[in-house]
Image (cartoon, rainbow over all chains, first blue to last red; front, side, top):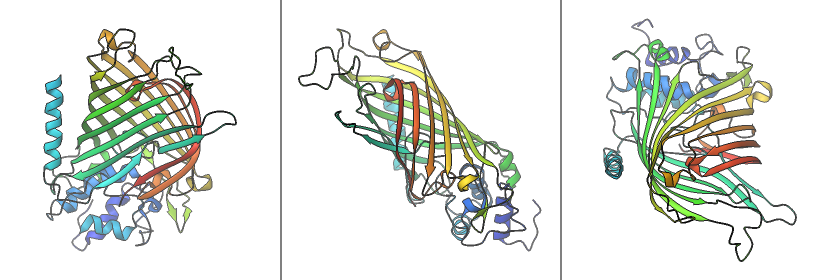
Amino acid sequence: MPKLPDLTDEHVLIAGVAVFVKGRDLHANPPRDNETLGAIGVSPSNLDFPIRTWINAKFRKPNGLPFLVSGDLKTTMTWARFRKAALE
Amino acid sequence: MKSILVLSAALCLTGMQARADNAAPTFTLNADEAPDPQPWSDPASFSYTKDKGSKAAIAADLAGRLDWALGPTTANTGFARLVAHRNTAAGSQTENYAAEAGLHFEQNTAPRGSTDPDDFKNAYYLFHDLSLAYVYETNFDDEADGCDATPRPAACVRSHQSSLRLKWTLQPYHYGWDTAPSFLDGAPTAASPAVAYAFGPLLTLFADDLVDAKAKNGLKPKGVVSGAAASLNLTLSPKILDYRFVFRASVQQTEAFQRPASRKTGFAGDSTLTKVSLDYDFGLRSFDAGPGWSPSIGISYVKGDDPLHGKLNRQETVFGVKLSYKSK
């Protein structure tokens, strides 16, 4: 994934999640704050295995934030809540 | 064997006390003992049947699990679980309870230090659950119609046994083993799959040491049964009715590596359990499980043996309400 200097963490988050979503182009139709991850097309297994592990490596560890554990992320989370869980 | 069990218990307890200062614990309720509920996990179920002129019967499969973080710089967790499998119907009697504590830890093959999501997409994942359980079980051998009469007929033998069970459950995963529906403005997108699916294998290695059992037919069962249970699990959900119809199927094969002579009658050398179900999710979809209650109604068919949960010679069809639950 290219690292552009003007990319915000949320852009990086959308680009990362887009890698795992087949049914919707998240670049053309980015997630809205009140949409759930399930509606966006994220499967529970992808969320709990690769996406959570990637978030820990990309955002949590470098920023000294507590790691997300299995079950912390759910497909019923809204995008706004997911963004907060991933980045804060 | 006993020293291994005691050592494992100490490890589990040590893990639980270590730095439980990360996120709030997560509670989940399901029917089975998978490391974490997946779309293919069976929801917890409870059914009550009462036919005219016959005795009422209940059937329940419940597994409640509490997970908590072990520290801020690890994704590993400690967990405690209570499991109940109970069926009071004549011919299908089951009574199996377990209290369990353990450690959950994770591995993946993504390159060390990588933050490229494609690396995590291409990686293989392995979840481990290492646990120690106290299991209490009722043996309903020789149960037949009329065994619920008072006084109880002498031919109906019922005894109890309890054991310490060490388990190591492995759950692998790779991207592509499931696909989920996508929605835009509440409707499935054109690119959303015609059939959403998820499948996953589970492997459990176990050692079960009887700590208390009553003699039956002059033979008191004792000793350790060790073995493995492997299962393949599949869920399919078609696009019609917004992916609310869910078909689940699983096959579990249990093989005992070692069985003392006194336990050979109570624990088969190899056994197969097949489960098929069709449910309609009228709350959250199975592909959106949690948080909160996720109710469904459906029919399940179970055939075969599951000696680890006291289910022997099973062939039953159950229609009822099912529930999954996740906190947070």
